[in-house]
Amino acid sequence: MKNRDDSFIRMIEVFNLVGQYENAMSFLDGYEFSYREGTSKVRDIIINTQVLLGIQYLEEANYEEALKRFLESLVQEEEAGSETYGKREKQVHYYIGLAYEALGKQSLANDHFRLVTEMEAGGEMTIMSYYKGLSYIKLGDKGMAKKVFDTMIDDANKQLRGPEVTAIKHDFGGREAENTRMSHSYTVRGLGYKGLGKSKKANKDLEKASGLNHSNVWAKKHLYHD
Image 1: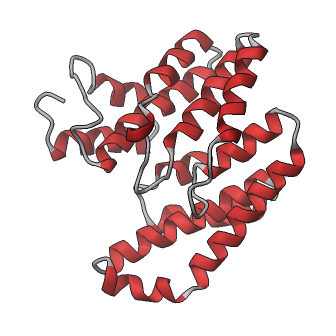
Image 2: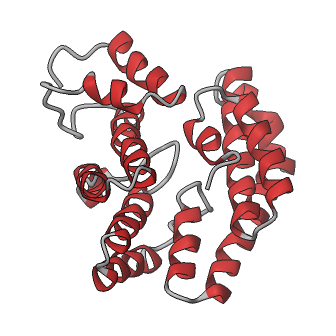
């Protein structure tokens, strides 16, 4: 991206966190960005901007523009991983499916939902696993969806009560890193509960996640939402 600096990226992140997605996108207009250039965090913020604005357009019934944003947020498979969130393709393909579904193109929608369910878990559950569970629901397989959501909760519980949590301050640079790690685990568990329809437990965890890490945009987005 031309003339990219930390303050520029931070401004985009702040607009996303306060729900001003069009303002965030306006900061990207006229800039060229290669996903190979930036850190995982920078890539995540750019993808977040596209996806969050796409969700806004979905809610406004502006389905063609929503689809455009979701398609533009796709990146090559080898670049789609994220240290923070996991494999972003799960999320993006799920929302592409929602856009096609809203446009009355169910066959295309199912193709994208199926892509998500066929993606390997790649280790422990992440925030992106939530969209795999939702995709199973869209395909009518509630049993597999429940398995994904239950595993998210189980994995998050292990992270939250395991010895690695207390060791984070030594291994990853202090209280801030510890809070970020715990925020992720609470988000994973909260989304697992959300997928199972346990809204009170979900919102309690997502509130906790947001409090631990104010930059956790997906905990904020899914809290009391959809």
